[in-house]
Length: 422
Ligand code: AMP
Image 1 (cartoon, rainbow, N blue to C red):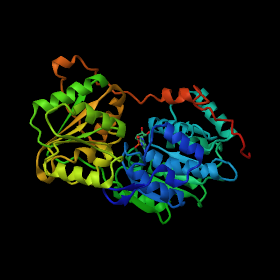
Image 2: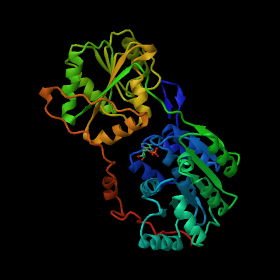
Image 3: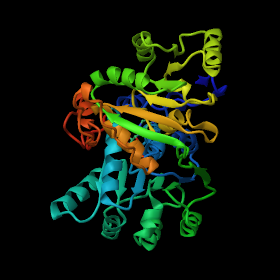
Image 4: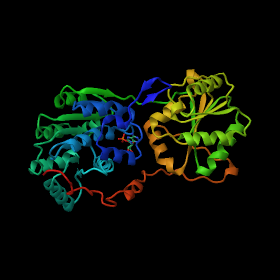
């Protein structure tokens, strides 16, 4: 897709030629565009290269390797145990397994999480599942070694080995365990290593288990120091009175408001027309000449308030923007940082305010986690009434599950793989 503001192309999920059922799964998970780590890693994994990637939790790193691996599996001529993912903790192993469930929801795909510390029934379920055959195993090192030593896993046809959070695994003392496990695997395989940091010991491990690996580094973005960040936790019907309140009370000479969709941008422009400021909407339905005129007027401060979608967040270089409002919370941390980075440019101060409705609370919490900061939650003006509590939970995966054919059965495809040879 072409970004007319930056004059450059960026990849969409449609560019990867993924299997149609996999695309359906990722879109139903609410993924719209690949995150930066996905843009970089997916093409490399699809090309069967080994990879050493430096990326933190929250960047979309799990899908960066799962998507191309699932695609390989779906395109394979015969199906065997294809992929081993090793993770440091049972929580992470389970989370990865759940993402496989989500992404592979419309595919015929089977996976299992294998981790220690549970009872004998779980042990025999895991053994039984392995005998029946699965495409992907997500395992913690200890339990995996126990199963390997008992001769319960056949890795003869393994194609991919993934080490997720490799630095944490080494911190937890799994260095030798990983080497033991690797000795059970075929030498000809694709090895993918993800780590939040790259200390020398990780490099040493990478040298031993990868082959001519490509390196990918996604630096964690941080917002500029001069930006004062604030958030309002509110209901949707409190957004409009609040934006009026903010724009009236404070003297912000130059404001950008981000909304989630083109239609919402247009609607908000209409809503704000009554206020005593020059407001314009910026969206892709305008022709190039109109867009240029609006940008000129915004730069010269004839237009005071500009409303747009994320197309406004990248590439526009206007100094003196005193306030950025996220009328709808952005989809991911990178978008958030790009949006709020429109203010406080060139060492000036600026304010970034985010409206967070109940649906966006978890998204916003993820953004805060990735940046490693807690954005102050501002009290709503009294006349707007009481807002919701900030109580971010896990995303509501049950909404998606309820819509699908295998509702309520987390390992729904297990043992049931239409059209595959076995
Ligand atoms: P991770 O960094 O793998 O822990 O992913 C963090 C969160 O981002 C998970 O909840 C993913 O489901 C979500 N996620 C991954 N890729 C995307 C994407 N392209 N668009 C939106 N959300 C994503």
